[in-house]
Length: 239
Image (tube, rainbow, N blue to C red; front, side, top):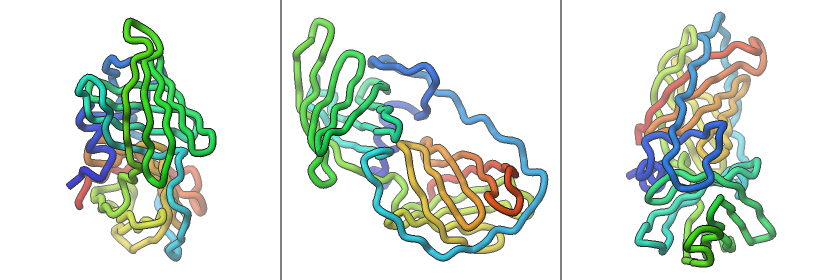
């Protein structure tokens, strides 16, 4: 059951979620570029095992939300609220890009032809959407979405292109904790997300990947010992 993951909502509208340099602010479909693979690492190094670190739960910047809206029977609705003020909306028809701002518990998300205004209460964001231009300008409707973490409680398995390693798994826990199981050891670390981009930090290395479909693809590097050494990784949902 991948319903809990925001990506399940994304799959209802597009096989790939990625952000291009040319933002779309209305409702047409938007093509998505693939992640360019990074060069394979040139040398090997050992990875340090660090103790499990606890961090605060995910806050609104960088979060993902899923639920529904009552307009033209479209139903499904998802928002991604980026840490830099970017916003993405996924409705029944398309992927739409815009901006968002927060004023206390009030959130305003603006797109080219509509605006969503609502209030956060606990883990629920609800309010009204309104068309701002076109023949339907002034028409409004209700929406309700719930905060979700597409990683928590999930395990992803695959491989990394790093000399001396190979198989790798990531197990995401509560409060931003993640566990990496590679060919040599089990390593505890932390993770944070910005919409569909996840950053995992371990003792002396960091992994940055993009969630697409049922997998995560990205690039990793050492932060000490062999800084600048890059390798790629791809993992798919196991449970």
